[in-house]
Length: 140
Image (cartoon, rainbow, N blue to C red; front, side, top):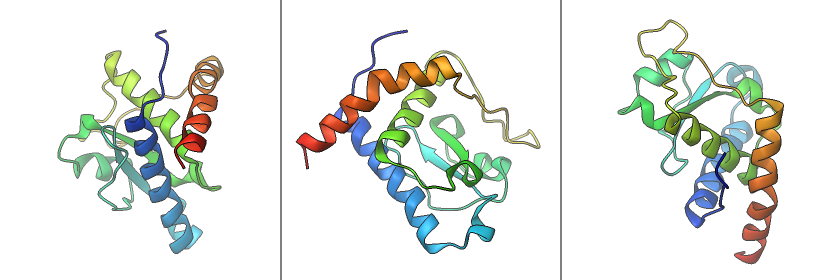
């Protein structure tokens, strides 16, 4: 795997995505939120702000479905940090760059999900997490 770098763009994308996740958690009841899906733009971590009932709905409503990463709030019950979302976005970018084409608007499930193995998770955390925190601390 190539060496990963923390860039200002990745930090901003992670912050933006994390803010979106945490705002929905703060202002939406968990029972209404727990099965909703959200799409994040890989380019900047932004979202259209819509909570979708299914992944298929989230995929169908994106202008360019292959330019987004999709996540269900079920996995975000405790919220998220800028570092976690930056790692998620970078992993998703790398998956697309490696040829994965996951979103499928014609699939009932919206297409398969790619999950990090424990080894991949360790690699991304080792490569990005401490540098991400250092970057955030030095630029705040």
